[in-house]
Image (spheres, rainbow, N blue to C red):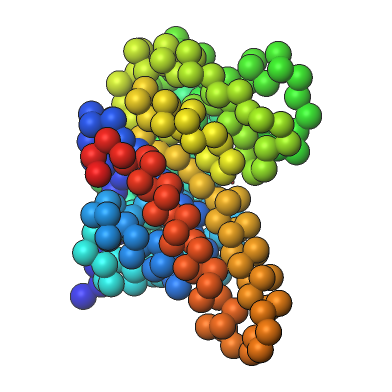
Length: 286
Ligand code: 13P
């Protein structure tokens, strides 16, 4: 019988209590997913995948993505979580839950506070009926393509009092923050706002999430984990790892084209990358 996917909340609540975090690894196919799941199994950590719109399309839809994650779950002894990342549309979130997702993010952070609350609370009401965990976002996380001054960038960050109000009004399980990371590659060294995180974590007791994990300085990540960050989303680094490894292997003398020859080294590099990040994030319990 097919193994079900797991919900996320209970693992992140434990992570917040014991001051560690899980990597949220972007998911785009079974074989790659399996290479990372084997590392999770080795370290006895839950395997947490995140999947956004682009990867859902690449999979050919939500059902295919959920089926691939369930197949991973059948092949490892640790829980497997597939988390819908930055979903913006209520109906799409309902479809993800119908497809078997047990963890979703509603990103209504582009809307004014009260509208963000309304949209997030509506998802919470639906998702909780099915035991599905919900991540909301407050504050805006920039893309690296955005050209912002320091004042503009800080103005987008999460306000501690608003965060407490947002959590109370929405009943959300997990909260994504904006504290200085960006999605994609950094054009300048980031300024991670730990003092702001400390204020937020004093006022908000639910698990907190840091997006834009690729390239974020590891000392700052470790510090953030001490102050309530329980999930670090990782995408760009994974794609770069595959890109570099597949380019390199083709330059090797005698390289012969087969899918295994092309991708096997990339999967080894991905597993090494994942192990390094998982050990960093969970060092307090490993
Ligand atoms: P990176 O691409 O910067 O790792 O960010 C991933 C992310 O936050 C997805 O939500």
